[in-house]
Length: 226
Image 1 (cartoon, rainbow, N blue to C red):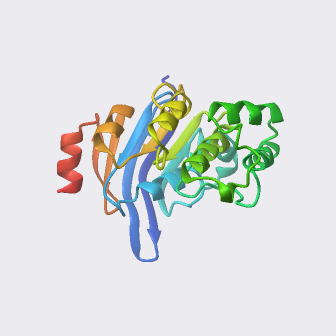
Image 2 (cartoon, helix red, strand yellow):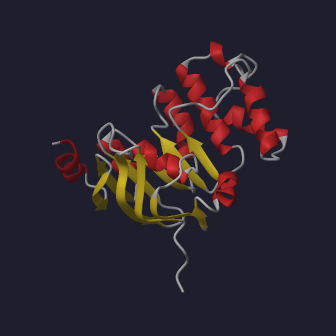
């Protein structure tokens, strides 16, 4: 019997009032693979990521993440997912290190892991500065460290390189990029770069699934942006 997909959605629906943010979205993703989410603004990419992260409840269809059915078994999923969204999920008045120590205690992770990740993302020298004093790129580095603290098997990444200079991108790539062994769902506005990062592409427009298959930037552009 083949292994169960790490992610599986069948007829997924999510609404905001009367507006369908996601309608009849279906896909599977095997362990160690990357699914790329593509589409114009308002397509439903971030909404889908937030459903998979258990931050939003689906309104229809079925979703399984890491063997847990959502929303009923979300408690099984939350501690095994790393999520980088548009909001950094960091306390601005605390230092970067204080933020990571707080999250480490939530996940019962040793403090040594905090120091390892601060070094890995190049933030050890500014670790004791309040988050409110840091640049956008530095905050993004800390968000990456926060998402990796508990060594999650699944990463949900919403434009994770936003605000980063080339040096920072190179620093984070082994942690969240193609070299990472983790299963990933990646939102990207850059069709060429995003397609190079993923094994399967899912194209959304106005909440509807228009493409699922091998990454093809030209076809994604034709279907989603023209």
